[in-house]
Image (cartoon, rainbow, N blue to C red; front, side, top):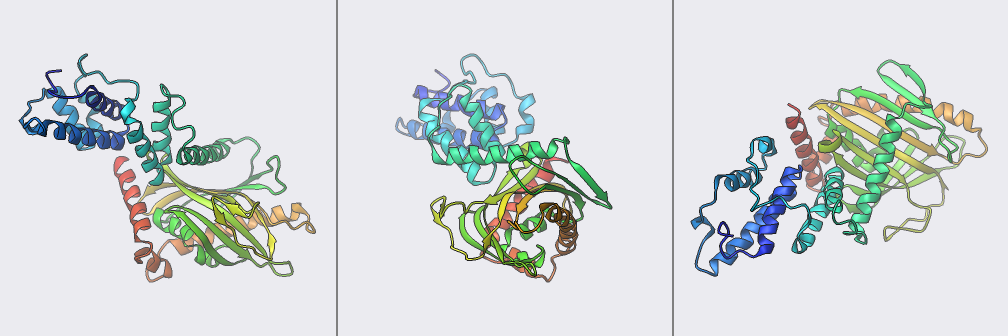
Length: 377
């Protein structure tokens, strides 16, 4: 092809596939594949004493290149059609498999589960068995399925019994296989997204806002937003209880307009994800699910949906009574969160946000929220 002198077929395919990624909304993977391919092509030209800058590319190629390099997906409708000699291919070039796998895992590690799963599904439209035995891909699919099932449950209005008063709504219903009610608490709070996430992230500060919680600590940081944590509870006149949970965060802002945080008990066995779990003498409580769906409205306001199903394993107390008190506690806890998270100035939470140990996490949250709010203008 005259347009690409001394260029292997695989390199042309990689350029083509980067255009395909960009055209289907995968801007960052398109950028990574295009720049890497361009660098490889430049190295090929240097062996023939030529430079990439010496080549003259037609307008259609230059415009697509500029859009990808600038990551400006908004110009896609105005880009010229690709000529037949340079089609946007629909199958993954063989030598790009590892590159795309790296892109998917990178999105997953960056908590962008929605974007990662979309890219994976696009690739599997033609390459059905791709990455089926890769551990990170299996974890991505498992976590995304859990989040998706919960979001469907929240959207499904069937069977919920509502208790509305003031600005906080509490709904509840029984789910098959659980003895306690699933509680759905909803509110719009004048609280920055980062502040609410901070309260969930700083595990040792849970006693400040979770009823009857006397202690919280992190057993293991599996990644930036994946953790195993322990909570200890002490309710007067009852034996002490504890929970041991695996929790993870999903940045679904670009796909669902929300951040989702999911946790559930993980101590049914002595080990979880290769981590030895602590042996605790108190009664084990079961967290069937604890999910927060956070939708930023602006820099200082957020819509919150919290779905919980918590079984304290109190067999001597009727579960009808437990369910009653759980509903009352859910609303009281929301009010306390709103008060604490409204202003962190001078608080221990502000110190944590600014600490060296947590800076990477909170800067990541701030960048993600800023990008999303800017895209909604």
